[in-house]
Length: 138
Ligand code: CMP
Image 1 (tube, rainbow, N blue to C red):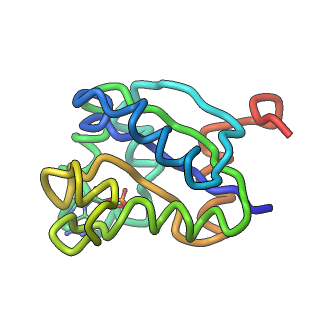
Image 2: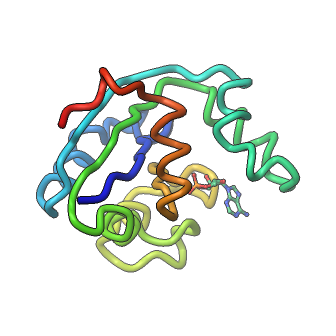
């Protein structure tokens, strides 16, 4: 069993896609082990995306991520990290496979509906960023 951190970003929440995205996860063998809705501050968004702090899109990304509420969740299942990434599609929605969440709903490379951890170490950091042990169902 593997765990990964998923975020339904402010554009996904604003477009009314919480149910649609959760349905895709659950229909594809990913179980929700924790879930909450939060409105990140700019500082909290900067902390989460600290690995991107030197990137040209960092300021715009953290503005966007703190622009409205998002849903953060832990997905659990066999190969959860890869499975989630396949369901999301490529970061750039123009390169995402048809039928993926980003191909279907993203409007730009930044406003791409969902985030998902890209590796086990990243997943550990990202899960701990949002959830404590008491908030995760076993
Ligand atoms: P995410 O998977 O959350 O990881 C970093 C985020 O930065 C990415 O999705 C996009 O929302 C955003 N972003 C904006 N511009 C770029 C870019 N040129 N390349 C990669 N990510 C970008």
